[in-house]
Amino acid sequence: MSTISIIAAIAENNAIGKGLHLLWHLPYDMKRFKEMTKGHAVIMGRKTFESLPKGALPERKNIVLTTLPPESFLDVFVCNSMHDAIELCEKESEVFMIGGAMVYKRALEIADKMYLTRVHHVFEDADIFFPEIHFDEWEETEHTDHPADEKHAYPYTFHTYIRKR
Image 1 (tube, rainbow, N blue to C red):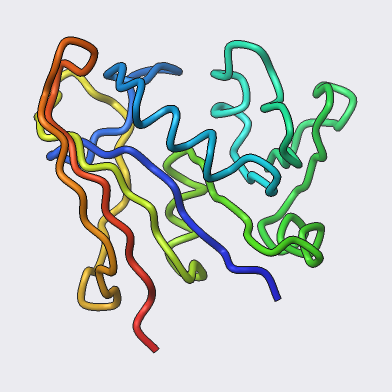
Image 2 (image 1 turned 90 degrees about the vertical axis):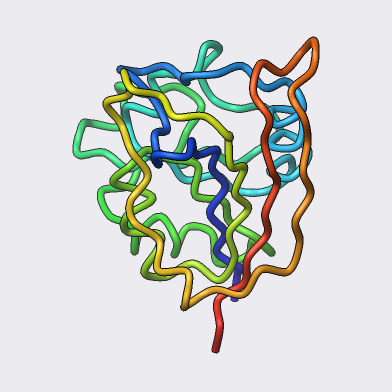
């Protein structure tokens, strides 16, 4: 059985994007994302896939949730349901849910773990938001604060949570 993990960067107001774009550039967060997901399966919605600048993420099993025909997508597996996507990952040790908002909403019901980057800023112009998290269902196991610096315009914190059983 695979560990189902959510990985997301979320602003103070739960903003995660505007249109098909991120609201911030945090190189260290992107490096962490790459290191954690490399060699694993990643499940994403169609719009998240379309927002990737170079298409499918290298060195990962890319799965796109969509009702569009599979031939519309290159170098990815296409599934019509979360159930089918997870079934496709049965041999994976960890499966990462990487967005967008609807994928996160469904993933919150089934995830075992969450890797969240909390961006300490409110983005008023956002139009895509992470769903409400019921933190009473989660236990924080790791917490690392990072200040703003020359490469990171906003302070941020890495959090790791596991679902309480």
